[in-house]
Image 1 (cartoon, rainbow, N blue to C red):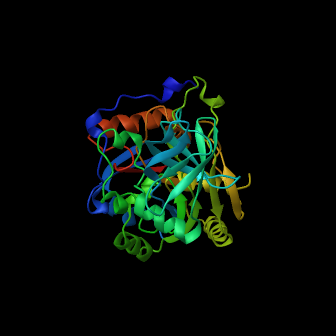
Image 2: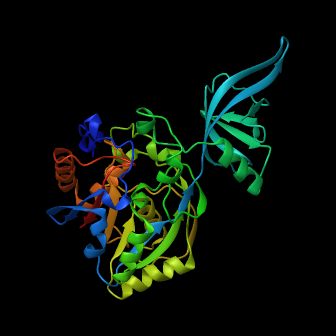
Image 3: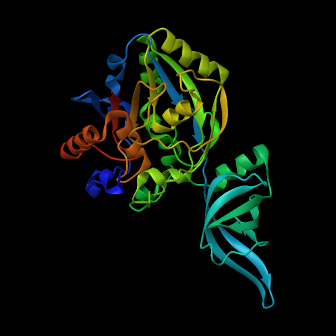
Length: 349
């Protein structure tokens, strides 16, 4: 499989820079086998069956984008300069790994000040990233980060506009509860409390897993042979309760429907070859591309993804590459909105 097999031309006008309001008004392209239907997210309860299970990612996006100034002493006196920091993930050695602009002028040992309350020491610079050790921890760090940080919008949105106060709510699932993501599980952004209540009333069960989505989700695939691509690792957890619900649904003949590629990747990571999901915690770098044999996932709700992305490869693995090419051709021709704030698809093999 070559990278060009997953390429397509997308008009810039179809890149969504704001979500639909209310959330359920987003369009929904339902593909079941070879049949396609144009609906809306608010129609979801009618598409599910009693006994189905929705698997939702309850990670919470942190305001991981910070603007500050670096400070250090030189022979000519103190030097300071502006920097932009995007937190990536907690570092095993302590602190946070981060992208810093400009990184080339950063020096180990200097201090970056973000606000009156929040600062960090540059502990290490390695492989294009910096390890920052903050002056606060725990709830004090969370509070200071909430004051100083911005929501880390994807680069294709930031190229068109800057983050603002509305993104604090828009770029966060209503059921988010475990802080740690630096990118949203975007299929989850389509749900509000009213829609979730209607889904439950249909007899559909809900369970939550946690996958802290990293900035690596936006990294392009650079190898021509896609099977040689190495995925970024992300931390996730499937609790004993979530594993039990998934297994009980399958045993009773219900469908396991992943909401978002993040939820799908996590439950597939936690599943054994015989389709039994066990409690699981740790980093996953699972890469799903055509030829993958799905263990527990019966259907997927997801947004429309970037050309040449691992997420487009994942949906092609679920539905077939040619079928997904037809789905995307239809979405572009009929004006579906793409990417994180865009419309959704429901994919049923």
